[in-house]
Amino acid sequence: MKKVKAEEAIGKVLAHDITEIIPGKKKDVAFKRGTVITHKDIERLLNLGKRYVFVFDKKIKGVHEDDASIRIAEAIMDSNMEYLPPREGKVSIKSRVNGLFYVNDKELYKINRVKDVLLSTVPNRFPVKKGDIVAATRIIPLYIGERELRMVERIGKHSVIKIKPFRSCKAGIVVTGNEVYSGRVKDGSAIVEEKIKDYGLSVIGKTIAPDEIGSIKGAIISLFKKGADIVITTAGLSVDPDDVTKEGIEATGAEVLFYGTPVFPGAMFLVARFQGNYILGAPACVYYNKYTVLDIILPRILAGETMHKHDMVKASYGGLCLNCEICHYPRCFFGKSS
Image (cartoon, rainbow, N blue to C red; front, side):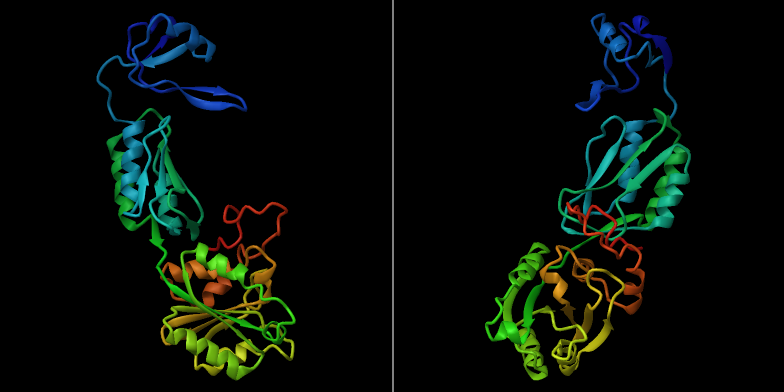
């Protein structure tokens, strides 16, 4: 590769992409690697600020940035991802499924310690939909040595990034509250129903139960008998004397894994296991907060995670929603624990 003045590049083959940036409007490739420079190209090159360009002079040692970025992508991604064609030396990796994205930060850091290699990802446990970009990679110079790429490929064998697809599950909903059961207050659980459908669950039944332990217990067991994989209860989890949803869940014989989470909104959230399935006790905040702890726990269960108390301890990191005027979840820190 040889550096020459733009005017001396006529008839020579360009060795790198040249980018055109129009502030506030676009950033795009003006000249692609491999272009044979002509006399009419010189004026545009100078307008782009390119007094000098790199052209092929003789056989190049190393791997070109486009090919290198593809190799890095292929080394790290799993079968639930695919990469986009190189653009200005960068390769973006996107999801092929709806699921939960995981990144092994230790292996990610190892790759970025390899000379001239760059790899960036979205946060760990990021919920993704088919087509979402989850990572991007490139090298710093135009060419990189085979040794460095092989180092990356060795690290890539340790599951640097992966996506676990959401399972197809059936859900049942138990709405608790004397005021809703009696008709004094309109049932607002359609909000919850739409939310869980958005995560890919099908709702096989919904029961409105009064604040009675036996009624709540019966409603939960009935939904499981109908084929529910998950039952979600709404409200009735505060310290008010009428709130007995927790007691109703316990009466089924379910094991309460945790009650109370260091996540706001959703502090009174409950998770229990019933005969291998989950009961999620969602506090009343799910009716008026767009995103809550339910949006942290439900995707993890759908991705096949087994819930433990320590999961909620870790959820305290990134567990505070700032209730932004314009919500950008999940493209924010809420729920992005390690």
